Image (cartoon, rainbow, N blue to C red; front, side, top):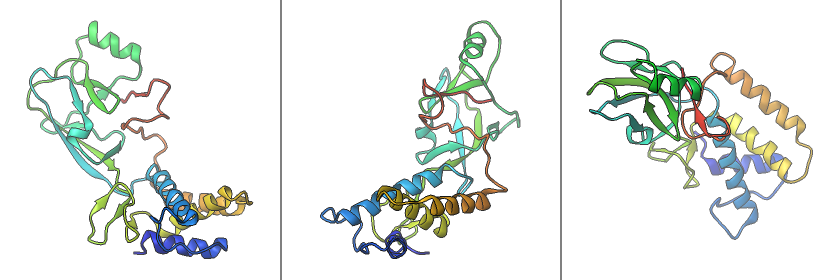
Length: 226
């Protein structure tokens, strides 16, 4: 698996620019820019498809309605939609779809185990029963693997290797480099988009809702899940 430095060096050949030798060399504008564009590309790819899927487990506590997702899964990025279940009963959890419905359910309806996600918190309408095991699938925030195979959510070494398709990473960095340089990048961008669609034609779930804090969720930064 090519590391991020090697990938950037291959991109430099395609872009006809100086080959980076150390992405963390702050004295080199070229090397620093490649690192920035590599991180931008990996973060963008993280939003697509199920590169990795893990299972999270939330155990309820007496009288508690709010649970930090980061306390349950330190590497949480986003929920795989429609995968939250009560382990013991197999019942599927239902979330509110609007602030109005959430408030109505909280104060006027006798509903239990109904929740919303706000600022990275599982927030139940009413305290759920104690010691219930709630399971769900989620996408981790992993971007790269170290030389030893350790999962990392950021590039910290030249030898880190992206978990994503290498060709996609290369194309993503290339069109961003061309754009940053003020050059025509339409052909490279279109190739990147085609490859992206080919990779996720069968798995891309446009309806999935990210449950980590997201500026794209809505103006209030709140995501409502059902």
